[in-house]
Image 1 (cartoon, rainbow, N blue to C red):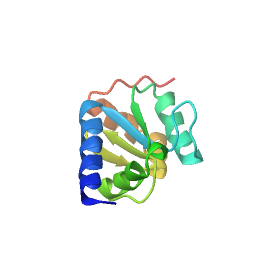
Image 2 (tube, rainbow, N blue to C red):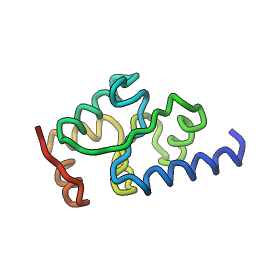
Image 3 (cartoon, rainbow, N blue to C red):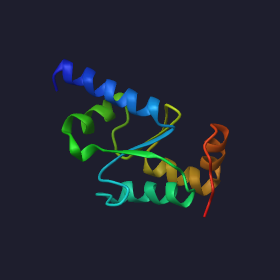
Image 4 (tube, rainbow, N blue to C red):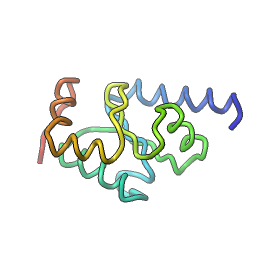
Length: 115
């Protein structure tokens, strides 16, 4: 990846997480997740009725590689809440099971309405 592309991708990522309270960088879309891990995180967010924005990293190789470098996290999906990197699928699922995710979201002013 060229230096300028990385800077552009980082700017796109920063803008995305600054302008949305909850952002999921995922493979596919919420309606058509393209991997089981992305689908699992979508299910957690849906179960909590969280409004979130998603970025399909399959739309761009630069974004797919850029988000991994940006967060220093090797896998996708990646969840951000109020500009803070929360984690990937296993972390999000575990936090959901323990109730920690609901507490974190509520403490950040995110409306949580478990279904």
